[in-house]
Image (cartoon, rainbow, N blue to C red; front, side, top):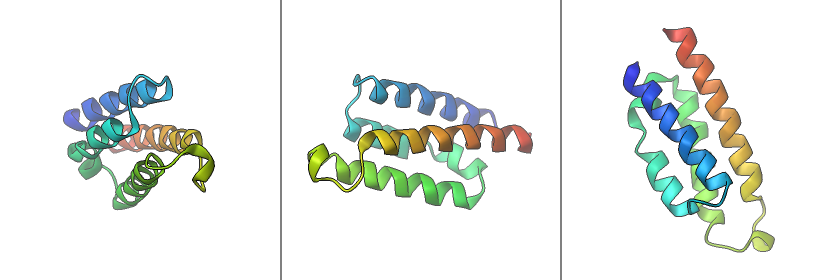
Amino acid sequence: MNAASDQLTAFNSQLAQIQSDQLLASAFVTQARAHTDLLQALPEKYSTVYHDLLDRLESGALFSEESCSFSQRDLLDSLAMWAAKAQAALQQAS
């Protein structure tokens, strides 16, 4: 479970970086997809939601904010909510 917790900590750090415009969406998505230990430690539904949000973030990064049907901010807020729930699930499992 330690690797999963470490990856969640890294994810939260990367999320803070993209939220403060210090990390590009493409780099964030690449790093986020590498957190396999975290996803394996969580129920399958977490992985499904995680990948869906990352896919939308990655697709949205290809277009300007106005031409996209969802905002990057909303997706990042959803990822922050996902991270909070993932943290609670990891704590409950340990």
